[in-house]
Length: 363
Ligand SMILES: Cc1cc2nc3c(=O)[nH]c(=O)nc-3n(C[C@H](O)[C@H](O)[C@H](O)COP(=O)(O)OP(=O)(O)OC[C@H]3O[C@@H](n4cnc5c(N)ncnc54)[C@H](O)[C@@H]3O)c2cc1C
Image (tube, rainbow, N blue to C red; front, side, top):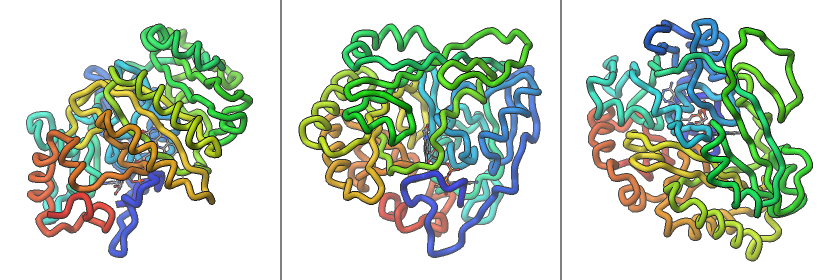
């Protein structure tokens, strides 16, 4: 299955048949009373904001870009930042899937095991045709992004995390680091701090404001610019309680062993959820991401990051580079075997495994 092709891992590549549901798009049904909607699987997140808003609803939280298909974003556990919010997958309450036997299967909250397997499935249960989402009443956001020295971010960490709906930051190891994500002028050892606060809807639509100080409908504020990735990213989720130590160790590694790498270190938060293959499964998490520059041999850097974070028992973002093998998978996902049982039931002939996923999931 192809979504919008925004994964850094070869989750979509196949020498076989590739299905593209990008024409299957839009909101199918909307239930304002229970804040729920059914959407077609091929819908880009960007295409859902306006029709949901017209129905008085919003997605509770979003990532830094909105060009992904909803099914693709869910399949990899895509998320934004905010300690009281789970990933997009955690907001999935139902799904229609065509399994590997050609049966159309409807999954909902009355089948929690199937739902938890389907929430982050990498397309392994079959093509998803439609998704039911738990939404929230429509809301506006005020963006108050700032640049702070790293020492200040460390000091204000808990305050920023509890005061803002969304707190995340990019730490810059060098003076060129901010260029990689087009974050403007941020000196070495400083952070670009993304801060979003919910504001009451006064009913007025504002003219577009200056980036970093905008106030607008939430779905217009989340995307922050970089959609043409000129980097290859790795993102690992650790337990939120370990985050300060993990960040300190990463900064040390980047400064001392890889001064030639320009990548910023991005740090974000997510609430625990129940998806069997979710990186946040059963634990409140903090995600740490770094990127390799295209055209350079960045693998030694990313492998060293993997080794440094390994004592924290990290789980990867499925759409971003990682070094998991089958053995590690079973170790870090307590419900891996439950996922496998459901995968085998849905796809007994392994139709939905490509080479990358076969190495991780084939029997
Ligand atoms: C510039 C950039 C910024 C990003 N920012 C963020 C961010 O802020 N937060 C975050 O968490 N991630 C982020 N990502 C990662 C991205 O959200 C994920 O990789 C996401 O999966 C991409 O969605 P897609 O529609 O492109 O899916 P694809 O990459 O095309 O597919 C992903 C997976 O979904 C499966 N799939 C797609 N459609 C279906 C379907 N209908 N039925 C069954 N399976 C399906 C595919 O087979 C594949 O396994 C970013 C990536 C880039 C390149």
